[in-house]
Every structure is written in structure tokens, then in C-alpha cells.
View (cartoon, rainbow over the protein chains, first blue to last red):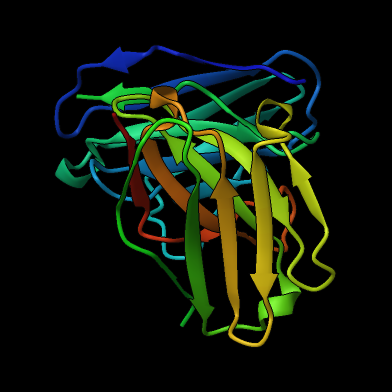
Length: 105
Length: 120
């Protein structure tokens, strides 16, 4: 099975900051990588799919990049509603697998 | 619009079974694979498996094989997830999610979650 890691596990940031979250796969997954945002008590919401494609309706301050094993989610200017936990997910192989999450405080 | 509405919270004793439902609407039920993902309190997301609502075919994560059963009722556009031989570690919020069609097949719609508490 493919294992996913994320760094950092948590980070402290302020409104307006540029935030970068890293996700690494244990083997090549091409660009079969999705990013989700989860607010407390809510279901996750997809932000970026296929590594860099912005989901419809998601603000352009979110962007994704990477291929192979290393991926990045960037928030160009953090907004108050962005304080949440972010998860990457690989869909290259079954079983799908999520990263452990990054909490943005 | 696409809606996934799950059944309400459950409290079960160890060793019992639980069956969670996910009622779908707003799209062609048989056109999209459906998945179940769970989240223990304060923990991350854990993928459990999927069901093809068209054929009824399923795939379960190895961890849950032998304990989980995913079914569907095409007449009322509902999928079900039944987990048996519950343990305290199964206490979690259980989500259904729709697998979308584009590359990397993200979950583009989710149910609201169902809290299952396993306690003696």
C-alpha cells in the first residue's frame, strides 16, 4: 500500500501570510493527488485535484503543484476562513490513502 | 444539486453491529462510485472502501475485510455501510463520499457524517 506523509503536522500563521504544506508519497503516484480542507465538525471539501487543478468555486489563493512523490499546497494569502486542517489523498492505487493532516492555527 | 444525507448518530455496545445509510439525490445514482471514510475523535481520515451502485460491486480496505459490508438500494438511491463486531476503536464519525469523474477522482460531495459511539 502507498503511504502518505505531510509536513508540518501543524503551523501557526496570520492573516495575509503565505502558507505552504508538503505531502509526500511512499512511491510514484504521478499526479493522482487531491487536497482537502476540513473545518471542525464538518465534512472535508476538495480544494485541488489531480495535483494542480483547482476545484470549481475554490478561491484562486489556493494552488497545488508536484508530481511523482512530492506535492505542495500553497495558500498565497491566508484568510480567516482558511484556519482548518488540510489533507492530501492519493488515488493512484487502491486502497486510496490520506495523509495525516496539517492543522493551520 | 447533489446531496448526500446520512442517518443519525448511533450508540452501540462492543460486539454489536451498526448500519449507516447515505441517501443520495440530485444526480444519477448509478453513475458514480460511492466510498466510506471514517474519522476517529481528533484523528485523521481513514478510507474504508467503495461500492459501485450500478453493479453492487465492492472493494474493502484490508483492515475492514470480514467486518464491513457495503450495499445499495437502487430503487431509493441509498447506500449502506454495516460494520460488525464493533470495538471501542470503531468510535468515529463515518462519512459517505461521492467519487467524481475527473482525473484523480476526488470526492466532490460528502455526507454530513454519522457519529458512531461504541461503549459498554
